[in-house]
Length: 179
Image (cartoon, rainbow, N blue to C red; front, side, top):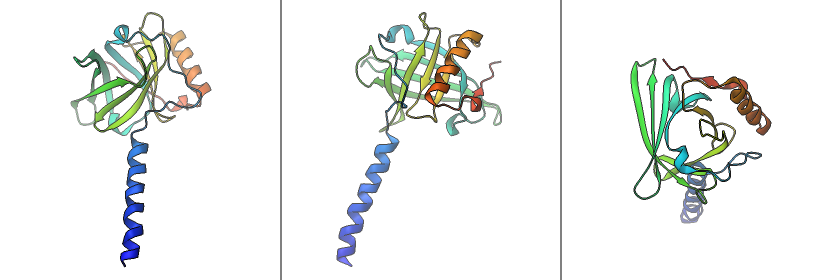
């Protein structure tokens, strides 16, 4: 019995550690490249979520916005808000983002439930910082953001083509209502 415990306990701890490590992934999907020469200060402010996949934590949400602001320690405050049209109530989630490497590369890690961090990668952005394409850790997470409630068709097509070329199933995107 003691021999079994000597095997089961370390193996269980190892498996638990591996699961925690995988849940804290701050990677970037294969084929995706984070924006270089990124200007974090220009990125701060309010963004409207234009499209996303159907994630559990944003289920039944419309009027979704993300507001980014600088924290005193140099990290970024992430304030997400949205209206759950089924429950008829507003939801808010506040988290923190930090750059994975340096501020000139748009690879960040974000956490709403520390110590769990996830990848947040700006993989396309227009020169005026009005429209952004965001990739998560893998092909399950994708967002299209805009400074306004709508996005020009040319930008929409550019982002969809880029995401599709990386391997995203863009036909499964949810187009968020803002009213």
